[in-house]
Length: 418
Image (cartoon, rainbow, N blue to C red; front, side, top):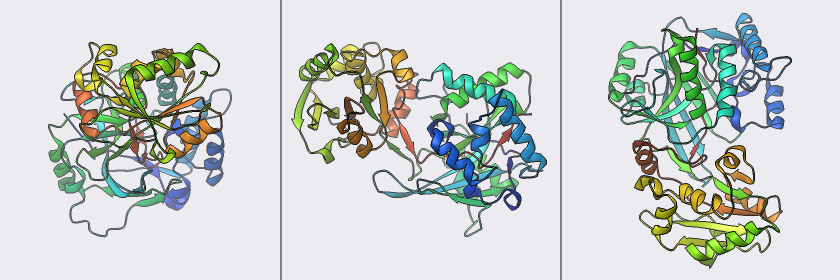
């Protein structure tokens, strides 16, 4: 069951380190080399130096050294008393809609996956887990929060009556999301937030590798202590600002190979195909409707709408999987197409061999039209109810089945593990 606990957070002293705007960073796994350099140029205290470490001979030890130096300089300080932190994110999504998402930053006991406790929803791979484990060993801290969903409403009772209270800190990220953070130590408010989610299980929305790292680290250290907890942002499943967008699939290595003809034959066999305009490539989400993809290749550059002719095609390639999984767009595409005529293995998918991803329609279209990729499949967003159903069935989705927007910044808080 959800057990959100207040934490004695390690956080920036904004009077010493400077504005929060210059200190936060996107999650490590979406930061490329150029963006890392730009973030570091904003401030010597930017969290990217710790969360995505560089330095010889051991980048992880360099991260630990930086963290210690920042504490010695009082750029980072630790609270004397535990608190919960309320986070508000005002954003405009990729679809142009303006929304507000609210959640609670807390520490949560690390447990095994299972009913009534915590559930994953996507497959993970060993490479990122090893990287995050080495960082945890060196820094003895959670550098970035895991994003999890719960039933009920924790943030409402925590912030009730605060009105226009000034936030502890605020920052607008590079995608225009305004992040505002309040520190709340009142025991009655904390107890009300805990009571509101008691009995709810948690569903990981983003940060599967980090959660599994936290489990491995806790078992490695052994015994009881602060290492048995992990930093989480908890958001209600009923929050009106909770949105999921699709991640489109990009294919490479098809040109002048037998895969190209095999892909064509598979699409003709299983899908009704109609021409559409480029702006119609991303199919609409129609609850109860047929499975649909958008498709374009770099040879013909003609946009198409693909409609699965018969669910029996999905049932055959996903035999043995729960019904909720057999109705998942990304699972059907993976089994029927990517691992079928395209010939990708799970290892290929894990290491992006012949496969890429794009989170915007415009980028995916340009990457195919420019010849950077040979083809693209445009997907619909996965409804949060389907995420819940698949997690409850005890199976995990293919990677990048969900794109929860916006991302939770790194650098708002740190959770010491010792």
